[in-house]
Length: 579
Image (cartoon, rainbow, N blue to C red; front, top):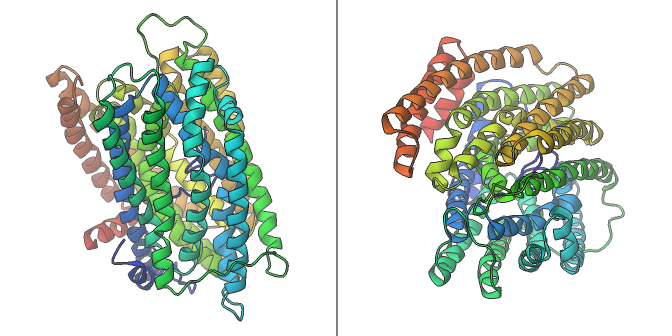
């Protein structure tokens, strides 16, 4: 399964320290001179990553708050929740299909190269921004006209009432498409200039605006029933709910104009792309677009299967029973993607600029060292995150979303988390290809991951009980990520030669052993607390399980890494202590 935000096929998620100038001066990610080989390179990368992770942590925490408040407003299950989830994802999906992954994959390398031009890359950036802004405006208008068709593509089995509701919501949220594009291009200009903080902190503004809008919604219309949600929304409710969601995305994009102005960036509209070196970028863009197309085709199947499960998976649904559907899948993905966004996106964003600079200057050995460093750092943290979600998914779900649907949300997130380390590593490996202006090889990895996931999604639809369909979709996503990463690593080795593969493998074997021991200890602690409390029946009981078992998982994992002499743990802990 792929989602429209942080899929490896689709690029980084649209996600202040002391300010943009501070980020630029302290990040070190723009260093292209051997910083990845040795302790100084590790510290430089971790400093950059921590600046971004801080912004991402606040943004994701607020994103979870927004999701919890959204469940209070419209429920986790039911027609209203599913209609809003499908409609609100449309601008993300369309944006990724036409531009998102392409921009994230090619903008930074091209801007870094253009910065060596006599004008510092000003003409290149002006023409690129003009092209993207005008193109997105046209596509946004077209999508609003085609809103009924877009909704039907993702929920063809819905009846006319459900389709009308989702279409009405879509008309309010589709303008987000334009502002997602503006946010991405402005943010990548900042990244290419070594200012990483604002791009990761801007979504905080989005979440604050959205939470305020949901608070207004609850104040005006009350809260949804915890187990059945809302069956429908009237035009005023749609305007408040969807309108404030779009207003948040608008604010997220426009706030980046402040740090850009401080860096001296000005934009002069220039039309035409001839003579600014976009041919090589266009080649990568075509392959990236093809990969996104495959990924989103898989996501289309995923949503259809989730809708099928919510309607009984071919069996009649008993009166009064509401089955989990696309909304539950979306909430579970928020839990699953949180550690990826905090660690992988932050590390890779900092590393991508450095990789691009090294390769541009011919430092092949430095690029390979950076790739090894990134894979090892990601492994230490992503495996711990996956272990925590697998063991504690259900209590975390109940703690955040309540007993009415929280357990299945958490179980689905745990199923997705089985593939989390592979997902994060695949994200990094793809950027290694993009830094070399190679879009073909990551496309192959995406195809393999997508085909495996789609085949397993069909199996889930045919054999898994309706109440567990969304959990089965999480498992199929995990298996697809494993297959995609294995393919990408083989292709990367053929393209670049050895990138310290033996060292990376040894580390992951020790990390996996540590995770198994920590997971078993955490499972035992969780079972013991649940036995004492007679199960997870409320948020307080879920909190007790999470605190006790979570501490056991983290403590045992760190002790095991110490015992197996995983040096990368010291780098991560030292950076955490400094911050």
